[in-house]
Image (cartoon, rainbow, N blue to C red):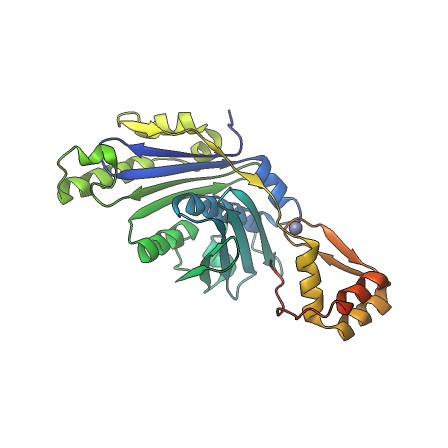
Amino acid sequence: MHDGDIIRRFVFDRFPVRGHLVHLDASWRALAEHHAYPEPIRRVLGEGVAATVLLAATVKFEGRLTLQVEGPGIMHLMVVQATHQMAVRGVARWTGEPPAGRSSIDALVGEGRMFVTVESEDRQSRYQGVVPLLGEGLAACFESYFQQSEQLPTRLWLVATPERAAGLLLQRLPSGASAAASEIEHSAADGDEDWNRIVHLASTITEAELAGLTADELLRRLFHEEDLRVFEPAPVYFQCACARERVSGILRSLGEVEVREILAERGQVEVRCEFCNRAWQYDAVDVSALFAAAEPASGPRVLQ
Ligand SMILES: [Zn+2]
């Protein structure tokens, strides 16, 4: 039984540990259908989407959060974005054939890096964190990102099938951070023990369970002996933020000469959005209008 495109937050009543569980069905399929992804690449992209939504749920921001993974391997770029309203989009680029069977992100991307950028809605404020791909998978990369950026011990479990992308995140908060936990005398040693036990319980999850069970079933299966408070689910959906205005900006930054060359060659200029596959078309009149308005170019920005 599936429960759709949702993220659920939960907290442990007796100690300062919080969690999020995300399930993406239709949104994941809509996101992935625009490219004929080879299976290993689609799987890593799905894990990246689940992880990005989990990260967006734990960070306070109004705007958009971007995960970018790049490296010298077959899958040389992956970009996933989530807004604070949980609209997600994402794309992966690859060259050549990935090896058949299961490949980790490290095998596909090579010695790469993972960037996390958080931008405000007006793009005026921006924070960026970078971690190297560590050779232990995407979940491990996110764990070291959390350690570095927020100094909070965090664990993630991720899975993606053609039908569903899902993820579970657990995060240990500073002692006394949860209202419920502050009522209880809690030593650091108790805290370590509780955290280790919760992580151990979560580690018994199988990929089939993470992908197949509903949030309720999964939390019951893992933590039935714990006092858990589960909050109302929030919807997650696929939505692309591409707009003609931004495509026009990209064309202006290419320069009039080049754009007119393309126009002469093909009769029209078409820019296809990599995230949603929408085609933005410009005929001769549009191209003239584009450069008549003499707005300053803002530099080439392909993935916007
Ligand atoms: Zn688009």
